[in-house]
Amino acid sequence: MPHLSTRITGLNDGGSDGWDVFYRARALVAAGHDITELTIGEHDRRTDPAILHDMHASALGGHTGYAAVPGTEGLRDAVAARVAERTGVATTRDNVLITPGGQAALFAAHMAALDGGQTGLYIDPCYATYPGTIRAAGGRAVAVATTPDTGFLPHPRALAGPARGARSLLVNTPNNPAGRVYPRHTLDGIAAVAEAHDLWVISDEVYDTQVWDGAHLSPRALPRMAARTLVAGSLSKSHAMTGSRIGWLVGPEDAIARAAELATVTTYGVPGFIQDAAQAAIARGTEPEVDVAAPFRRRRDLLMRVVAAEGEEAVRALPAEGTMYVLLDIRATGMTGAAFADALLDAEGIAVMPGESFGQAAAGHVRVALTVDDARLERALRTLARFARARVPA
Image (cartoon, rainbow, N blue to C red; front, side, top):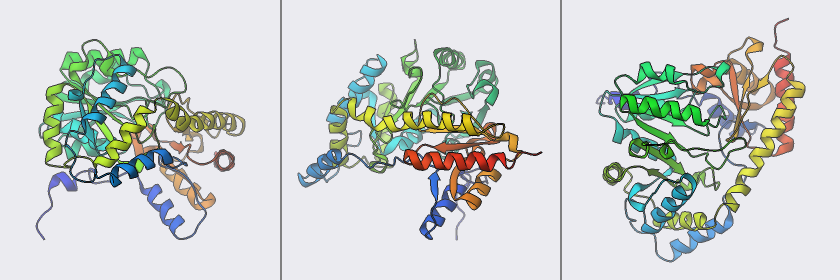
């Protein structure tokens, strides 16, 4: 057969896509094994039936044909109003492109920011798709490492060197996998580097409704940053609509207009009945978002109690200020995150994600998704702690 492009064969830089444990866990479930899955950010509740009713009614009402590629005016207006209210930045429909989920928004943002071979920076550890997304856009993906000692927060000094000659910087707050909510001083440092080196800041804010400590601040809201920031958002996490694939990209009007042209030759828009349901979901205000987020705050607290009581010297929970995840430090066992996760799955039927799936900065850690009911989560955490204690060298 003809050769495949280096763009497609090089998405994972010759390695794994980071989801090996997840794939293995799903295969075990399919084979009939009882597996506690604490891997991906999939809610243990389904989309609100009221949202599905709106989607169904829209489809039956005839909104099943081609929808406007940038998004319906009603949904773009709703997203713009939501963003303006929460960030204080003036936003209109012309600043909004509707996309098939936040992942498509991240791809569009990098296509807008990078020419072939140009450097796109991202913070390590990161969501596993980030480097592949940059490579898919033709860019050169370069990690900016953080450390456990600094709580995985990026420091301007670490950014300054890689920023020379780069074109974009991808940040994520609230952060997956570390659970950090970037404080103002961290974002001010990012903004200063972006201005000094004329970078686009691409800000993944899909967890903006899952904040337990502190407050979410969008880089777009900082002085002079609206003109150089592209924000990816979605209803996947806020409204448990992961399968609906409904998200958006927010940015300067010219950039959004060009990104809409990209959508014309890639996705050709998002189904109109899904957009109508999303508009209705946003119109219901913040109460449904608080309801969807509440279990993860409660389970974060549960995890911190259990690990503090039973982890001893074997496992330590990193403070999680937001998101539906917590990183556990298991370096005292002497195992890599990958080895620990594989062994835990084999021995106990508990699936967690290795820290190495998110970058080398999180080596020796595992990420726990707070996505099963409280009782099952507590049992799994107690088992994990016992498993880790048994593997600490004497």
